[in-house]
Amino acid sequence: MRIPQFRKAARRLRPEDERPPVRRQVVYGLQHILSMYGGVIAVPLIIGGATGLPPERIALLVTAALFVSGAATILQTVGIPFFGSQLPLVQGATFASVATMTAIAARGGGLPSVFGSIIVASLVGLVLSPFFSQLIRFFPPVVTGTIITVIGISLLPVSFRWAMGGTAGTPGYGSVGNIALAGLTLLIVLLVSRLLQGLLSRLSILLGIVAGTLAAFALGKADFSGVGHGPVVAVPELLPFGAPVFSVSAIVSMTVVILVTMIETTADIVALGEIVGTEVSPRRVGDGLRADMLSSAVAPLFGSFPCTAFAQNVGLVALTRVKSRYVVATGGLILVVLGLLPVLGRVAAAIPQPVLGGAGIVLFGMVAASGIRTLAKVDYEHNLNLVLVATALGFGIIPIAVPEFWSHFPGWFATIMDSGISSASVVAVLLNLAFNEIRGRRAAGPSTVAAAPSPGAVPPRTDGPDTTG
Image (cartoon, rainbow, N blue to C red; front, top):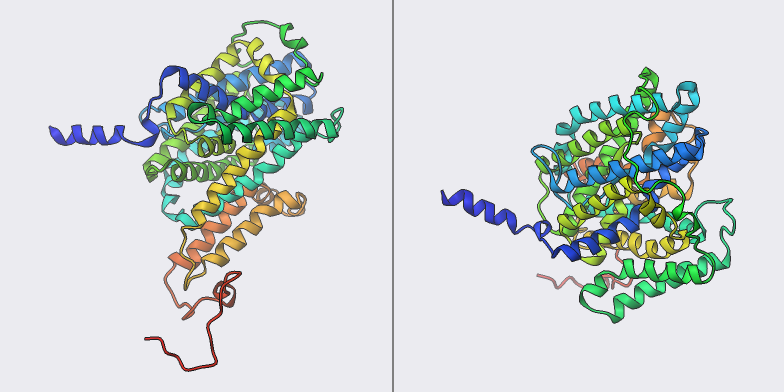
């Protein structure tokens, strides 16, 4: 009888199982939501605009996205049998699906065809989840460190665009005033992190966003006049855009996207496990993927889109060192409330993009820094790990530096490689298999590239006899 009790006690000692006081859970959870709010509403805004929906119908998409993201976050963090990784992962509508969903809608099927393809593709992903969970053994530190680094690098351009004002064409986009406001927010975050201690230091992102918003309001760059317009309470409708339509071509296209999001989710789960300092087993990855796929399959019923883990919140965990999954679960509850109370969502939506951009530079940069820290622990002697990291990083940066690089390749291939995270994951895993897993004839020593001395290293002497033992 004592063995199960011991195991239960050991499970409670996991870093992610810590339960801060309720007040801190609410504050930390709110910080998570503010850091990703712009991302979670961006997908419905883009799709709604691309399909020509009127503002009131786009509002339905936004409300549904908030509600579904909150419910998916609670499922992922709290978990039920076979569903949920029980890690502090925030769920939200994935950007990886935007291009495919826009193309499906443009073919004439509209949103019903988009929703039908999401349902079927997500169910396919649900069936494949146990197989994906077995990939965990192919994610050693040399792979996870590379992926975490690319996640951070891939997200940084988002913060830069936020700092400039959101999207090209927006009034004032790229103006000195917008960038200065982002810089002020960044400065506040840094000052809070440096000068304050304890709880206040961990709230540096939230305090920076609040102070930056107040400064923007004083300068006339924040507009809260629209907060009072619209309903205070709105329950998400069931099938608000009609019954889903199932098209074979749309389902095939969306299935490719779902497979890409599964790769990204696997990478995020492994990366977060490294940051939190907890064990991530194949079973845990499978539970996380099943939660992802179940949420994505249910989302269209409320008028929302595929859900996946938000990498920017991985950076917030690394920055604040608050590893509790209950904090993120509280953030999920806040998202649900935002989905039920559009008036609160309109308040959060009024936060200027440059303010989010200033905070995002720290958040996303922290993700990349965490990856570099993991890579620092990797053994590079007498192997090809250095070549692996260099190549995977290169492929991960291609979509950021040259977005049209894969545009003339087959659609399924371009879908995978157009995501820096998925392309780096695929390349890193394949090279790790080739260099470290597959047994066969290998060179006696490392390649010239891998054997090159690090900068500043003193080369060995060759002008005298060898005196080493």
